[in-house]
Length: 166
Image (cartoon, rainbow, N blue to C red; front, side, top):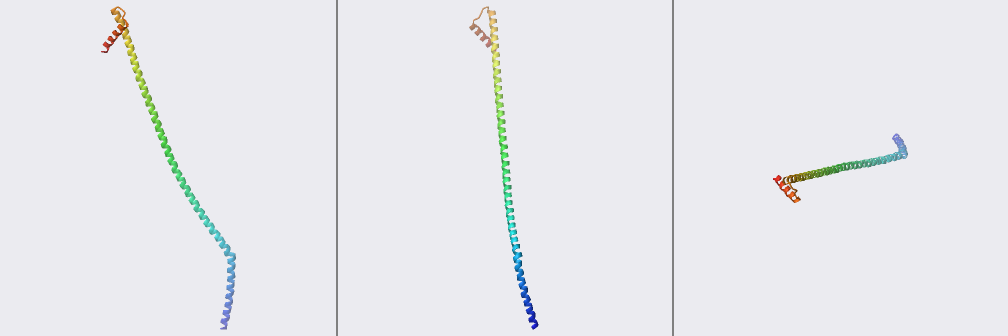
């Protein structure tokens, strides 16, 4: 039994010694290793969180810019469509104006040509009337052998023309 007690004392002393060494090592590791390591881990954790937040912000900003560009593209397409529509409308109005002016000018030219033709016909008839009147007066003077007064000439011409018309 004595041997056992001596062994237990030895073991108890060794155990206390080992516990004391272990506590000292824990203190040293905690003081020199865990402090800097945990500080480094905390810095790393904060950096990762910051990087994730930055990435999320950049992604939101990129999505916002993409949406804005898409909206601007739609607006550009609408503006282009509107500009083309206005240009077509203006071209159609210009075309209609040109056609209307050309039709008006053509109608005016036709009307003037009709008036000119009517005037030429009237002038030709008047010249023919005068020529017939002169010839009739000359013939009548030769047949009657005397000069006719203006009133007599007029009556004679009118009777002759009435005879031509019938």
